[in-house]
Image (cartoon, rainbow, N blue to C red; front, top):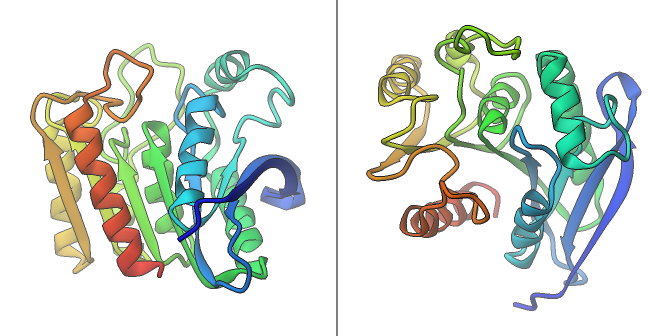
Length: 247
């Protein structure tokens, strides 16, 4: 398999027909039909690290799209400034998130190299949003990387205006992979257990893994929270999971 890719910032139609910026990364293998992945960035925003994740999926043979969820608040701003503005506004509204992911999924399905299958993956706040997308849209696979507030609510004083969505587990449209840190607080092991119980009760297909010695953001290579062993194993599980459901 060639690892040649094309990666670029483009504009697509998101929620309510709004034009938003996305980062697109696609393999250059003419004539091959491949699955698509919508990458949902973490709370720090549409940054270099998350763009690298999109390129990683392209190198592994997937069409990937990373929507800039903060585009409306701060078009063209630095990831740090855009994230601060979005956080001060209470975070991304759930309905808008679903609309933007729907637009990204439609873009992926419309590519000439698409096999028609689309999955979603998100980190931190994006993990919750990945689950939200999967209970709101017809998708083929979803990955939740330590998504906070699927269960439970933000602590007092937090500017985020989000609530628990675990009650939506019966609406899950696709298999779910969950990757968590055993030392995390949001989500804590008890939050993960509650989500697992809801999925089990609803008869959903899911696969959860928790890593000892890892807390929140253990995939983030440029942050002190990075845990190489957990991240390497997590990436192996992600590619195995998407290989099963998006190939």
